[in-house]
Length: 340
Image (cartoon, rainbow, N blue to C red):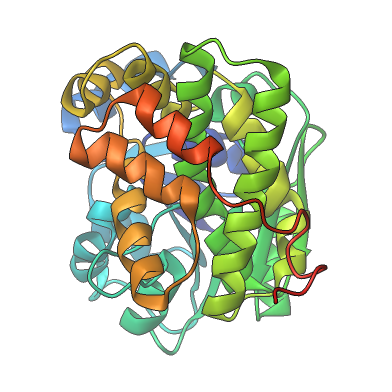
């Protein structure tokens, strides 16, 4: 691989900053784009992103910029690491800077509200001539920043893109595995955020390990049930981007969606829970979008139904929990026992 392969990372949040820093350590020219000039200037001077990853020292060769044209135009690979709500708008700003030879990659774990498009599909619709990929997996940014061993998935139809992303990101503590199921990989990353809210809720209520185990496995069943209806390969959900991401997001207080659920379990309303977090929790928006789609497709998703009632309809926590426990008991492993 050419060590002069140039990389642009769009989005100076925790994960974008961590990825850009790995690329710099691997010897590739990299620019990190932020909207906030004050934060960018502080990062240039202190070599620390004090707002999102205060414990990470930025590599001396990592260039922090606020000029979108400068960041994108010279890049060979562009990684978009921004919240899904801002995704399409940012792509519109980027249109005049993108060329068809660039690899375009997204790390955003969300679903577009009106279209039910995943972020790589939004990328594809805006830039149909480019190779597109998805990075997804059990990747808590603070642990990656601390160089704790982490695995992720790069999914794309393009073998060249997969190999290049592995080259720029793989290192001793960040292992990058390849997949050609872009849709399944990305859908798993988006859906698991919903169930992390449920996991945080159960922790706040003091529910036991048996309950948490049941919650994780029933969450995986719901995820794969919707995936099959949407055309994804359910086997993808057995990998890092499915069950791996689900486990870390549902078990760790570092997860933003888990923390929202925990606050809800303490009796706070949604506005207070999100305000306390101070960052975007994709699961809150994804919950409403998936609830609407599941109703349209008539896909049975009782955990989504219960969470939606709690988060958006003001249902009582204990009544929602009771309703979930009294649901009909269907097959254990999805697609093994045929429904009558």
